[in-house]
Image (cartoon, rainbow, N blue to C red; front, side, top):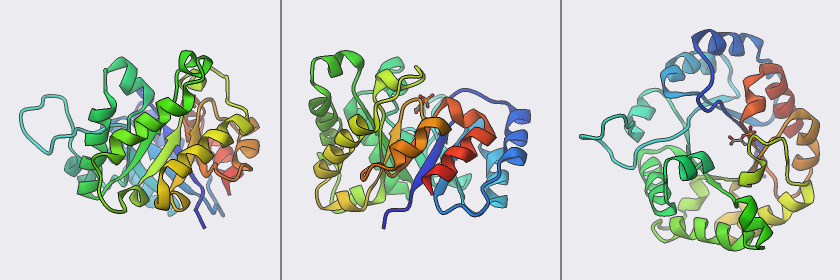
Length: 244
Ligand code: PEP
């Protein structure tokens, strides 16, 4: 009932040559899952080209402004992303929260800006190592979700994706065990209320082909948000195949 989804987050990596080679190396034949590629902004048009050639693939962005237009130097609006045929946009990635001081309230505004324009937000939530050790994981995630719940209306959750990304697992090679991840995913689904049954909840944090199948076997893990391993087209395709 929920289509598996795997999203590539290239972060600030790649080049024109890299993007061209990625798509020539990417083999997604006979794939049942949905695949999203989120390159840096300058490569959106190039990746859009690659996406047109691959029917199972959608284009994603890594960030957007909460504002629609105006004097906001360096920012990119939801409508601008739509002009590039972007379908998904990551909001609240832990690197944005920690390195660029994005609060849960700002993330919620970006979520709404994306949805109002017709984009599908991929909302990232997750706890730091310190918060996990203090057994505050579920409280932290509940607060991150509540910031969005507080300002959305109706069935908005149904038109979004949530990614559970424990901060201590991002780019560290440490993954949550499938059971640890599943218990948080179950909690998130319950927090989403009636919409929960329909929302794709992705796991992110050092996912690779070697650990993907065990994670995807969990009842509430509907796919992955993949950072480092998404820079290798063959490895990324193997993760996509593990999803379905
Ligand atoms: C990410 O950046 O969202 C991520 C999960 O990174 P990695 O797969 O490298 O841990």
